[in-house]
Amino acid sequence: YQTLRLVLGDQLNASHSWYQDKSEDVLYVMAELHQEATYTVHHIQKVQAFFAAMQGFAAGLKQAGFHVLHLTLDDTAEFKNLPEMLTHLIKKFGIQQFEYQLADEARLRTQMSEFCQSLEIKTMGFEAEHFYVSDQELGQYFKVNKKHRLEHFYRTLRARFDILMRNGEPEGGQWNYDKDNREKLKKQDLSDVPQPLLFANDVTEINERIARHNIKTMGKGDNTLLWPINRKQSVELLNFFCEVCLPNFGRFQDAMTGQLKGLGEDLGWSLYHSRISFALNSKILSPKQVVDTAIHYYRQSNGKINLAQIEGFVRQILGWREFVRGIYWANMPNYATLNHLDTTRVLPSWFWDANTKMNCQHHAISQSLDYAYAHHIQRLMITGNFCLIAGIHPDEVDAWYLGVYIDAIEWVEMPNTRGMSQFADGGIVGSKAYAASGNYVKKMSDYCSSCTYKVTETVGSNACPLNSLYWHFMHRNQEKLGNNPRTAMVFKNWLKKTDEQRAAVLNQAETYLENINNI
Ligand code: FAD
Image (cartoon, rainbow, N blue to C red; front, side, top):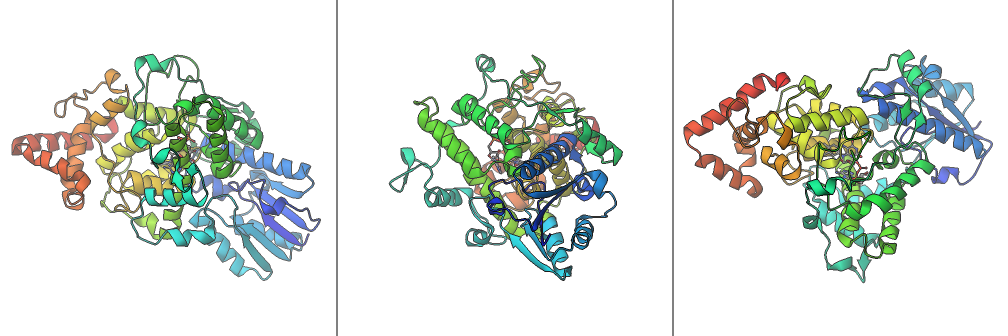
């Protein structure tokens, strides 16, 4: 072979221009690597999904007539890391040119660029050809340390790509229907929640390899993987979402319930969410395909899918997903070190076994461990909020989120976690700290009604820990947050309390923090 082309596990884009022509001289290499399976402790389903998807992609390329070398953990165990393996293959096959698609994680991009510098043969990097905004264009939209806001970026992209637009104006006359999208699931809504479409991919051999190579993982996983691992399954899931879930997507986007778990196997745990994040982040599906498909369903739906639902969905993909990527690349590598609120605490042990009396945390974490999945509000306002108000160090929080979710890749995980949820970037990604007391959980879920703790109480042995921790958070961060008009009101309320009341609340929070592993 003349050329070696490396395909990473999150580069499973079959529409890439690499595959427009076939050449006898090109060898495609895909490899299960110890370094990738261990750079954080991943959920077992995440490792299974990436390895299974890579295997399927390699088989598809081979079937289409490309030359592909697919290496398993067994084959790559002798190499310390990716560069070592590539060096070996380049020598073995007498390769004259090394080609790669730009990695989406800073860690890998640095590794690749150092590797390329060390080579004496020609090297060439390609765009991944996946995102709406290409790598080259990102700099036009994002500047380092700048406090960008989603809304402006999102509107610019809506207009640029002519998505849900009419004569240069947003369809329906409004850009944003967020206010229509905040409903709680009432008792009578529960029986309508659809069962998720699950797959049954056999991952027995992958599990054996994971065990054989002592890859440490977290969470539950057996020999059958429910996540989509190829294009056919991903498209099926996307169509299922558009048909069954999209009509209520925005409406119940922020809702949470503990009532469906245990009623029947796998009943309704992902509510009206799409669960296409793995298919998107591994690049099996492109964002354009997802947005175009959803809009197609909307147009054909005779009003069953209304504008607020489709706009809410498009905003997540065209807006948030592209936005956080821009923030990541404008601010890395420094972003990974930010800790605006100077937090120091380690994560409580129950993040790994869900063994906490707080029903909301228990539910969000056990679901995450069972399925490698939680929806956005569970991530932001349940576990994320707890970490924020308890003052957990952002490195700890990042590592957990980067491991536990099926869709966690650093470019999207970190701005969401360190930025949006932990405010460790001081407001680069979001305009305020998403701190909340138990009241928010009560408003958006039914978790509180069956909780050991009383959401209406702030002090006392049964008081909801979120209440005192919330005030403790506000109190200790007054200097950093007090100037923000969005939190100024909160401080006014805090100062209205008597000294004694404030001391009692702070004491209560301290007690919980001292016993953080047992609350
Ligand atoms: P849906 O609710 O059906 O939304 C559709 C799609 O929109 C998602 O698949 C995703 O591609 C996109 N999307 C929605 N919200 C966001 C967002 N805030 N940022 C980027 N894309 C978004 N998403 C990841 O893909 N990987 C992560 O590692 C990740 N970590 C997160 C950590 C925290 C603390 C928070 C608050 C959010 C995180 N998100 C992450 C965003 C979001 O929670 C997930 O994309 C979503 O829950 C995936 O489930 P879904 O496919 O059912 O999403």
